[in-house]
Image (cartoon, helix red, strand yellow):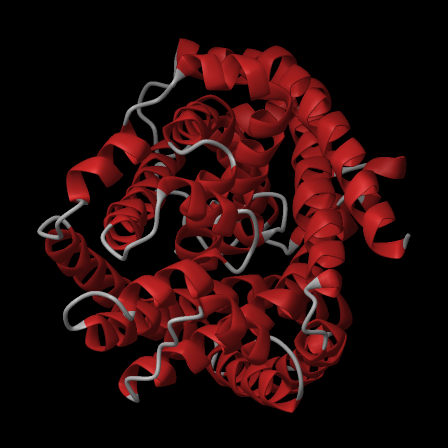
Length: 428
């Protein structure tokens, strides 16, 4: 649970038609996300390696190179993920100071570039380095056991409060009542956006699930674990919508304004902070909300960092602490252009390439491998910890072979077109 749930999800909903996006997103989580997470689980536990090492172990020829797609995606994503988390830290401080501006766009513009943005990017990466440097048990597991329950409790409390706001009913209608004609008319934009969001929020295609599964014992039921992870992650994202949209609709913003502001990564910063400035106890509520977002960002960032760090540990024999320092510093430096550039152009380029292309590509290639080449590996590993796999395993394989493959090919094609147009617009 991280920025995918609480930063990216609300602005994707706002940009792509409210409940129309939500319906497509939930469908893709079930039909595509669940089968693909099982692919990464089986590969990770079977090999007990990071993505690069895992594919070297089970693949031949070009298949051995797939792991680099996952590691590259994680590296690029964390470089701008950390910058956004730094902005979240600044907005938490704004709330504590009672300093949310009535002009949310101006405040966001002043936050997203320059030395302060670089400083908060550095602070966040330092925190990630510290946690991952302590290792799996003392660092990652201990931290997540504290952070995840805190995220859940804070979000549920915020959702209950948001439901008492004056325009909550109108907000729920926008968020929960889909217009199917909107989906039919805009599916070529909604489908790839929903898929990219599903993969980002479930950490698919960036090697997180491969790496974490490599630490699992053979007694674990991978299907059960997948259901828990997918269900809990989706529930968190859904709950964020129950917080964000009632706040927006009760903050003197019309639906048209919300949709316009929702068209971009500044959504929660501009729209929510502006709304917080117009509701009772808004500063306190805002500080709690953005503090929750920061905790969520940290809990997820350590997962992404572990993917790249585990490569140096497993494949290069580097000790954990120097590996973490080296990778963390490299990621920080790669993210500096995003932090310094207040126009969000670098963020758009990084996000289009990593989230919309590399995540889908990595998942597609690995699904093809398990579905058509390494089928025995997938079935053998999935069967461990499950008393009677039976026809469920066959159904999973055929889901990978046809509906998952076809859907991911279509989505990758649409995303490639969108990425080309977006990057060309920036360069042009």
